[in-house]
Length: 117
Image 1 (cartoon, rainbow, N blue to C red):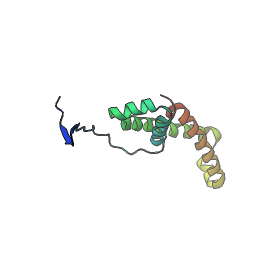
Image 2: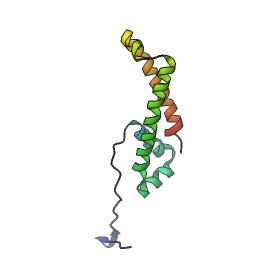
Image 3: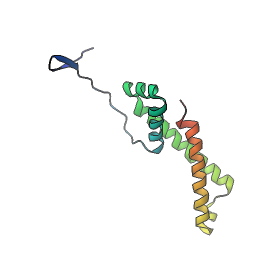
Image 4: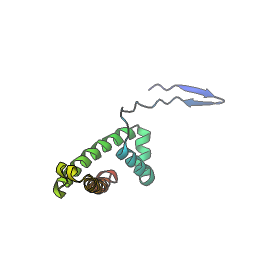
């Protein structure tokens, strides 16, 4: 293992090059997971950050959460009777019901995926 150093005054400081982060943008659920780890699981957050696996893990959790969110929204909308016919007949009622469903599903996804290790 070759290490290179940079001289800074009387000290030799190792040149540490981090590994490449995976491509992808953190969105709502990825950012929620990062905040949760940083505030409540600081040891896990530090370990992932130092090993260069943080963004990879955040992107994986984000993908899982988004898929679960989409599936649950569809299932709950179908079970409550929120359909395209309702949207055509009464848009405001449809929006209220969909917002309610999305809020409930977001709480479920947070508990099942975001706030678990």
